[in-house]
Image (cartoon, rainbow, N blue to C red; front, top):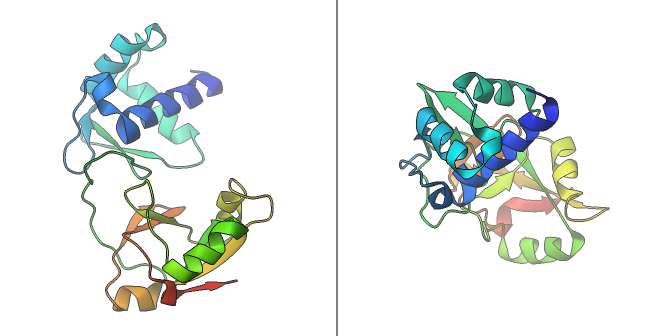
Length: 183
């Protein structure tokens, strides 16, 4: 499968698993999993480009992408983060690194420093494990982003729950303003 086709497949799978599973007539369990066979059938019904998909194509897609957005286990697949579904997917809390980072626009930074980080239209706040990833994320919002440092160790000790999204994304329910500072 070509790189472009793998990218297209990743996008359609993300849409199905993160945003509108009902359009594909699939049902996710409480942790966001769906049987691969069910998703393969659903994608084939939704678009003729996907009529010959196999489980191997899904593994190739995950291996070829630089950002881990999906995981496969026991012939099931799920999106790791970024859900905008009405019901909240359950996740296991994890001990975060001492510091995490959040890239944002200058306009949003002032509001965040006053009110804390909130998930907005997502299920969780998205955080980066290092400054470089936060800059990359922040540039989606502003050419010259503001990088916030999250005192994740202190926030966790105070009761903020953190969850591992993947190697480049940490998640939190919300982060109070007292644990944030500008880099």
